Length: 132
Image 1 (cartoon, one colour):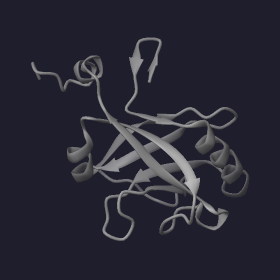
Image 2 (cartoon, rainbow, N blue to C red; image 1 turned 180 degrees about the vertical axis):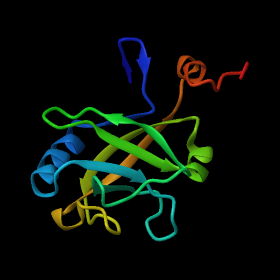
Image 3 (tube, rainbow, N blue to C red; image 1 turned 45 degrees about the horizontal axis):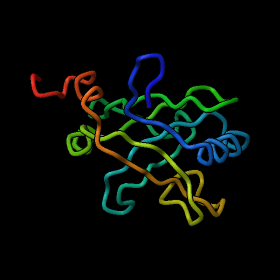
């Protein structure tokens, strides 16, 4: 959550990091886009870098640091971000079938979101406190 006084909006569990290391062997560098569509619910979608093109209506949530991998960028649509802007997101993995075109689909595992509300210090850091 906190690293040398810097707050992050997004994090990854060790289990999800292990799956990301496995997927990188097959697919190369990866990125996430937090889905808000009707078909995938709110599943975090994992793509090879360059397969999903972000645009001006996407918000960069942060960068995942996974041991042994290049940084993994995480994006969310601007409309979805408005609903989740007070939330810290952790990407985790569980047994199950991946959603849509997300690369973990055939592995027998899927990425999920675990979330919590930002604490007061994080709210202030991200400019969302009472004085904002």
